[in-house]
Length: 343
Image (cartoon, rainbow, N blue to C red):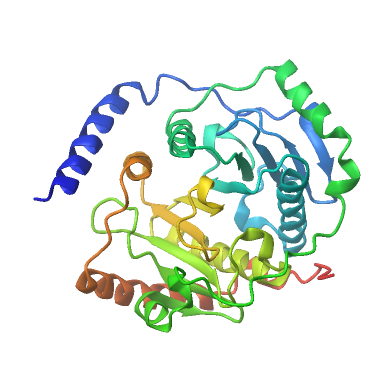
């Protein structure tokens, strides 16, 4: 057994034992109030994160109660795209923050009634790995919520930017050529990991998957064109990625995997290791698998992910390729809604 693997197993065991005893000690849940709203569209809103994964986080969610991601329409996905992109642009232009992470969980974390995207800013400092560790720590343990006064101060901070949130987002012009370290611009890498090819987006299997047991359901949705980060993603690419996501969610829920983590990172300090935007989708089959999956994410923030062997990768790609193809063929409700204005 290699030293790296020994360290990995040891850390995982220590964290597992420690967290087993305190996992359910804190049971706060997210309660949204109108005063936390920063800006509201017709179908979604951006608000102060009442129980944030990271300091400075904001949340985008549906206006309709108990609305899961699978019930979002194209109009909601489009409006969320503009709000998330404009938030990142606001941080970039006014606070010199270019790195961020966006995450959503199913079911929503901390007993929230609504699915929501949480966008988290990351400053460029040498403690970014600690910041990433804290995010996953808060994901595992239901973190304490902000006070009413703390939320009010954050809401007031953004009050002067209300017009900014309502603007249609224009993507940053992409780089004209692939970065030398971008594996997703290499045909042989795509060929070895691809599960499904859409119009603008591909679904790949992660070569270093997060998962428990034999079922390591960890997919990546990537644009066919080179896009370094989320600010370069077009609305059309984003909508296709969400349609793929919703189809996967519906398919794997029926197969007994109702828990999912959906996240993407932009920038080195937010944990992006490949200079090509990619959306992670990680499935779990039960609460215990969800818990162990969270622990794996936590440990992998401290130790680099262990890649699969070529034979293991080929076996799992072949296994999931047929399943993903079947998932993409199902006509989900989201594909039937065409009311989005693609301006």
